[in-house]
Image (cartoon, rainbow, N blue to C red; front, side, top):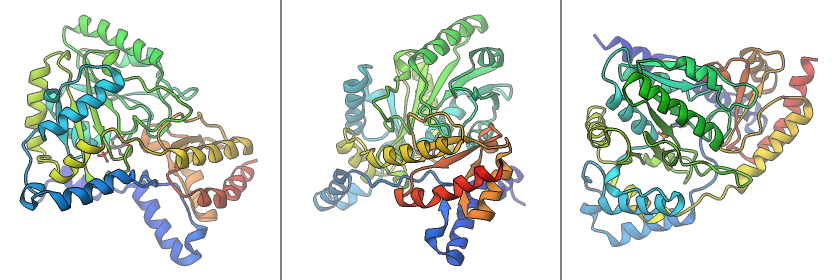
Length: 396
Ligand code: PLP
């Protein structure tokens, strides 16, 4: 006997993983250079040199027992202080070490917050389509419901009327992911201020705080100098979930945090409950070595030139061929309208006819669009362009 729910999760097909596996298989048949895999969001730029230098230095200079030992539950105080100092320097937000809780990446940060805020099976978290498919798992497994605001497919900002209609007395939090996976869009400060106003009004109306859960692993991945508003600066009741998986290209190192600002409603209780929830899911004591690396490298910024070049090449070429998509200001995704509105059929045809692997938007709650992860080599993009062209022409 095994748990049916978790068995279901463990065996459910994943479109992204299947496409990736298909790509590996096809590479053996037609050659790696003839497979155009846009399925995975795995960073393709190396971590800044200082990261590896710091790892080497720490290994050479730190006592092995200490370096590989457990850390305390919330993470090392000096590391959290370095993160707080960095946030304060960039966002003037008065962050304190005591408001930060270190986690093994952004996923456990989100899951801990989901568990911490859920108090009844009627509780609802609100996601704005298109959104990261794992939200379905994170929030429903915490015992809450996931309510969905349909996508604004014109600008991929947020349909405020639809959001207002989705909020009710069971609403616990709105999950905001900007820069967004899969659209690459950055929500404007104007949009975020409107959400803050709406949530203040609704919190009063229902007599309890409605939080924003800011899911921010792509915060530093922006182009053309676009500003990513730090959401706690526009809405007090914001809980931030962050990781260095994308910003420092460290997804395998599993390091991130939850930030519960003191000004947030019930901040102490929320922080302590996040800590308790992290215990339940076993996401405890994030790696000591990696925490120490972050403590020294928190000021490092990614070199985004390669992503920017990829974005420009892909966006300019696809729109020239006649594809429609919102210009992404951040992350490393492009969310493209399928030529005849059926992204599942487009993805299948692209796969079979051209070994071109794109992810249908259905899993992101936005059918009719497909996602391209452009964290790939620029050469692969160049080689894949004839396939995109042939695909759209086949629909004319
Ligand atoms: N949130 C979003 C929007 C993501 O795209 C991802 C990973 O792709 C995560 C959270 C999880 O990040 P991590 O790998 O740090 O757990």
